[in-house]
Image: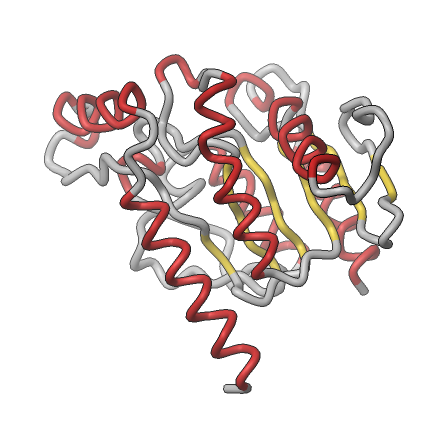
Length: 232
């Protein structure tokens, strides 16, 4: 392992430890813990994670996926982002097809899943009530995104949904990476930054989008084909 890789891994692990210990949003912490006690009948015998969910992926990733928040009975149950729910099924299948993951399924933290040149984060690291974090709660998580981007050699940001798009764009603007108005979100939107990096937009692979056909598998696959082309 090179010294740079070792340094990235240490910083990555340190950051994730801090994320999991975060208590900045009492409403969210209480909600995560309450869901972990009540559980869903299908998972009644499982031990829920019930805490902030850390970043996942390659500590040297050039592709950074930015989602919204952990699912109440997905990542808040398993402890790994986009794991254990339908959104994760769609995401990891597409990542595997594009060569960013070693397998197409993500069911639990010890299932052997690895990502290549790709990392995943959320604008909110705790499962929020009704899947709707407040603006203040998103702002409380903003420093985690700042620290993560400082670690990763990101070339492409891929935002899942309008909230993630806006939060990523605001981060870029606030860090003087561009000084214009916020670019408009749409599926397939592409915004070129002055430093050569790129912000991509995609509909979130939530059941609300996939069940209604607003997002199809070919649409999601094309997004990752675009990301791969931009990286390589």
